Every structure is written in structure tokens, then in C-alpha cells.
Length: 502
Ligand code: BG6
Image (cartoon, rainbow, N blue to C red; front, side, top):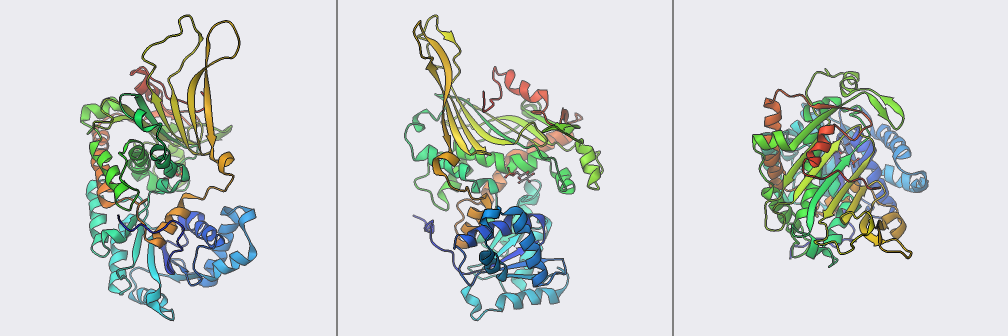
């Protein structure tokens, strides 16, 4: 067995360096997550958190910025003065101009500034533009702070196509071994996503049904109500396929479709996910034309408030607004292996949709024979809804007899499992789990190089076909479930998108 650290073990003492320390991700997600772990007593006393950025802030200036971010992003009940004081005392900030060798030497001095520098595991979290990944790693190597225990964390996107992803992987790989590289897909840190593995493989009743014999099709939806916010410049070069499908949705698909590994270990789960990515039906040009829909929001109403079109959102953040970038994707694919042959997997994701929900729906086949002649009411196929967020939980939809005499009246009912009710605990943010795994050196929930490249290999023909086609993304008003073509993608197969409350 590979030596996966025990789940409750404390991490080693760390120097956790965040490049992009004053950025949105650091202040909104990383620092609040580290604070929560400190609150739970999981950061060893000597662990330091070092922010590196172009901002001229000194230590106290960064501490103030982090304190104010905690006030915004940590629930009031979790903010305790003594913990905030302990946490902010760990913080140091270093203004760094990447071109200035003196600044890199200052970083070296800061990392060596410990009674025994070799005591701390060095983590370098690159919350910066991916084009900087290679050069930062090279500099870290040159100043001599990368040893065998050091780790680097890469935020997505890893490249914007296969060639650029390979380039990133090569350049980082020249400094760090694959076992030291942690590529984040924060969906893998979500409780409900990890629970998908447990539901499938720590129970017996689903596994015999989890195949093409009993499953009619699978739907994976990640629908958001937010627009592109202040990220227009990044998003307009990415679009929904690169931003969401290539990583988050394909990872969810992998967890639904993968074979059971012998045990959950640092390589075994990733080996199985890789096999799923490699089994995805390759998209030929005619498949892209028939089986994908791309859309883009125009002005509309979200939660009762008027919101502008994507082009106007983009102009407001200094962009051009004339691009063909998609903010919505729906597509149909298939996993070409013994278990899943012939079972469609429908994926969709979009911004500015009618509601915020991420869910997986496994729709089972109709019973082979209806033995209730003259029964009133409706029967619907059994469905397992796995709600990733919000309100994490599961619903199993069954058909039941409505109580009362006078024949069979069939009604759909559901068995509900709500995590909030069942466990009555705060569900930690995905980053909390992932950052602890980095500190403990457990890469199970991170994407391996071969996974990322396999995902690009499958995605790239779609990007190429879209780039070559004259057709523009279909328009959908903000606050709706996306373009009608997305509904037709299923209707032509005699199916519909399932809603949780149906
Ligand atoms: C990010 C994407 O990876 O995931 C964003 O870049 C998206 O565009 C976000 O909004 C969604 O994450 P979550 O956890 O809010 O579903």
C-alpha cells in the first residue's frame, strides 16, 4: 500500500508561502481556510504563512488586510480574538519584483530565518497567472529553497490547451518531482464530492446497478447565478469549457464513472480517474456539431435584479466585448468501456443562470414490465440526485403507492439525506481539506499530470471545432436555464434535464 498519511495526523511544521498573497483567491479563500484550520488546532505552533506579492505592504499592512478579509469571509461565530491574534502573528509579507534578484534573496533570507531552517516543510502556493509558474519555480530553485520535502501548489488553469498545459508541466517539472506538485481542482475538496466515493464504494446496494444494464443516463450540472465579476480579462480568454468543463465537470464525471480502486491511496484513485478520461468518446467534428451547445448570456433578471449582458460585463472590466467566448456549455459524451457502453453522460454549466446548483443525477431505466394494469398516476424512473451544493445531500426518487383503498395510485416520493440534518456540523470549505492535504503531503485529491493532459486531449477537438465554425454562441437571457438548444440536446434523445424539486 502507498503510505497515505493518517487523516487526523497533524501536518509537519510548515512555511506556507502564497505567491499572490494580496490577491482575491488568497484573501477570499486561502487565508480564511488556513484560519479555520488554526481554529481547529491543526496548525503546529511554528507554522508560518508568508505572503509574496507586488504590493509594497509590510508585515503589519498585510496582517491588517488579512484581518479585514477574515471579518468578511469567516462567520462571526468562528472569529475569536485570541485565535485571530495567534493566526495573524504567523503572517509575514514580502513585496517582490520578480525581475529584481535582491527581492529573491530577501525571500531566501526570510525562509532561512528560523532557529533550524530545515525543520519546516516549504509549501509554495502559486495563486498567480499560470504563465508565471515556470519562472517562479526556476527562481525558487536558483535561490536554493527547493529541497526534497518542498511542495508546489498550482491553481488552475493549467494551460489553455494541451500544448500549453504540457509546457507548464514541463517547466514546473524541471524543478519539482511529480510527487511534489499539487494541482488544485477545488471541486475534489468538496465534502459532497468526496462522499460520492463513499456512497458508491462503502455501500453495497448501488454497485450492482451502477452500469449500462440499469442506468439510462447521467446528468451533471454546475449552474451559477454569478456573472464574470471582475475576472473578465481571464474569463474572456477561457470561456466555460476551459474554466469549468475541462476540470471540475470532468472530475465529477470521473468519480461517477470510475471503477473501484483496491483502496483509497495517493495513486490508486487517480489511476482509475485517468482510465475514465482515456475512455471518453473522442469528439470528431460532426460530434461537436451535433453533441455540444455553447451559449452566452444577454441582459436579464437574476433573483429579481436586472443584470447586464456578458459583453457589457466585459466592457465594465476593461474588455472588448466583441469575442465569441461562451458562458454556457452543454454536451453529451460517453464512457467507452464495458461498464458504461451506450450510456449518455450529459454535462452542462453556465454563468448567470436561473439558480446556483451543482448536482449529479443518475437516472435509472424504467422497470422492464408494468404489472399494475389500470394504475392511476405517474411513474417516473428511479433517480439518484447527488446535490454537491448548496444544501449538500442526496435524494433517491422512488415510485410508491398512494395510501388508501380503491386500486393502485402511483406517486413519486423521495428518500432524502441532508448532510446538514444528518451530521449537524459545519461543512468545511473545500480549500480547508486541500490545504491540509498539501501540508501533510497527501496528493490523492489533486490532479496528476497525466490526468490534466488527458482532459485537455479530450477537450481540445471541441475548442478547435468551435474556433473554426462560423456559428456564434447561442444567446440566453440571464436568469434562465441556458439556451433552448441545450434542452433540445436531451429532447432529441427522448429525455429532459432533471430538476431537484421535480
Ligand atoms: C472556478 C471557476 O474554478 O470555480 C469560476 O474559475 C467558478 O468561474 C468557480 O465560478 C465555481 O466554484 P464553486 O465552488 O463556487 O462552485
